[in-house]
Image (cartoon, rainbow, N blue to C red; front, side, top):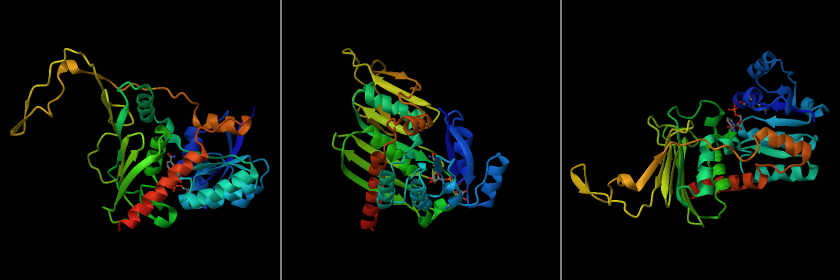
Length: 344
Ligand code: NAD
């Protein structure tokens, strides 16, 4: 089967990364680029790519089968709808749209035209997330009851469209989308309760970070935190199970997995001096009570993103990133914005 002929719309950081790093040439043939910026057009030409003069030219080109949309977030909807109407399949960067109403308008056209519309929720394939998913599914540290998922940067919001509300800037619509998608894909249980708070430490018009607490009906409590003013970072993941805990420091999988031995003859922890006081409650477990392991990578039990794109477009396979899941994530984001607005 021949590779799918794609045009990349928006050849900035992520659009060019798709071409250079993500799109395998046996599955995807990038036939050209459309971008409104001269710099992006120049770099596409330097990479030997055809540069289209307008979106209309891309959509009128019958050799083009699909487009990848990697523009700022506010441009996704209009481009996606025009491309679907023109008979193209569409892969769209996250966040798929600014809100659920926009996404519903896209999905309506996808349904009417029968063309594929899929969102690049790539962080389902992240090695650190695959470890957490494995712990959740195998019960290696018992049933998980608390999940903390954080990303901490120290450089503020990048000084581009991400600083502006009209383009869909802010961290909830940026990293928040990834972390919420991972969690909702993992935990198949309705949300019972939630609370959220945005930070505006650097005085931007959009959030430079947020904390979101979720309680699921199955009892799992989760915290999602994104920060951009953290000169010292907390671990990427901290999860607790009934029989152990895992701490993953970073994307390189540094960290530890601590599993309870449940030996009958385990010696009770002894009180320790803590500061100027004494505690037994906060004493570490005795040596016999736990075993520590390094964090080992877990291979994904599902195909890579563009393999799935190819299988969906050429063979009618099921998408790994389903639109109803993407919609659930965006609905939660809409709800968080409404919650924070109500609390003002
Ligand atoms: P960027 O600013 O680096 O690139 C955006 C490009 O789009 C620019 O070259 C700009 O000129 C072009 N553009 C703007 N409006 C356009 C229009 N109407 N038509 C054609 N081109 C247009 O931004 P980026 O970091 O590449 O982000 C692009 C998208 O990718 C965003 O939706 C972002 O959330 C997403 N993204 C996803 C990931 C991921 O891991 N999945 C990572 C980074 C960015």
